[in-house]
Image (cartoon, rainbow, N blue to C red; front, side):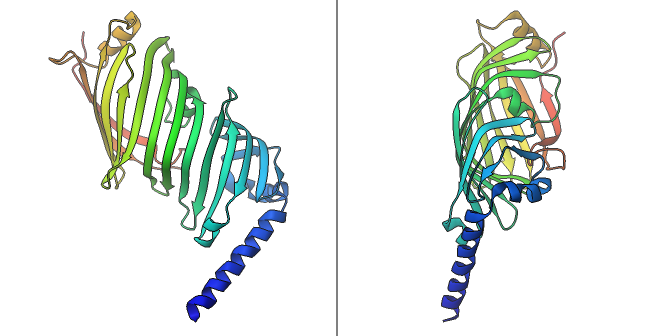
Length: 274
């Protein structure tokens, strides 16, 4: 009897929240919530909390246009605020995702399909003198961001037309990253798609936030002299003609970085050529 009573109370609370979200103008709510949502900024918001839209959403340099959302009812019964999103990227490509937030503060994303400029995503990473070009095609089945960083990720990210634009333009080719949840942590497998830069490696992210990347780089006949010269500064090829590389470090979330991005790192490669 007690469980039935608790169930009715939960259903009543959920129904009230749905009514509130369906009638509360999102413009009023955003004025109150904007400081807590920063650095996420919404522009020209309209509609209600339940079903609304914004002309643009910007998060640390990443911009999405024509954003629309609709909250889902059933996740509310499990203590999760969840919405289906549709949007357009800078080049007008359509995108979609399901985004949720749990009572513990974890951020959940699934069914993510987006095509984004690589330079925008690079703005989420620690500062680098390199400016990259090309497009990232993101297809994620699941992404969980907790307080400590990335807790789970499954899916693929393809880098199409990968280039370094600065300090010197260099064409790299196409690459694919596949994320797998091994049960012991996260594993990301990096592979090139036959361009001028031959690259392969595996990133392993443990549950305590420590990570290790091991891979190898080499150039193909289509590589430019600039790319060949750049690899000489990374290390010396082994017996197989490839330059071994290794990165180790720990992922940490800070107030001025996106959760889960690299703050400390150690790189090991072959001895640089002279």
